[in-house]
Length: 144
Image (cartoon, rainbow, N blue to C red; front, side, top):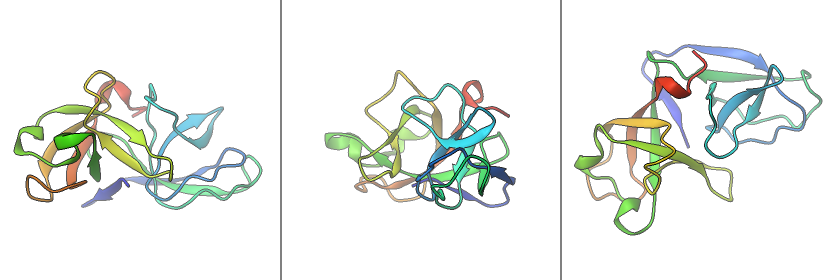
């Protein structure tokens, strides 16, 4: 799950139809409405601060922490083998993002090609399974 830390900018935005994303999901614009991102989104709107309402388009609003340079987020890492753990060498590295089958979003340490975030610091000590890190969304993949 992604969530913002410190002071951050957030907006209440209209949801797309039938959205069932979880709190902490990566969201994008879809025809002007907020929708959960698919894999490797070109542009990221931000992180949902509440779950989707599964309603008609525009019937509900979702609070979104915007993905822009002044917002920092905490996220858990995920990967295979040692990539599933935090490491000091992660600081400064860029990785992809991935949603698992439960709808939880992670920093994908197995993906160094379709990068969307840069790790700026560790929250949990190095060697922590599915540990938490501080990230920023890459400017090339943000709406703002």
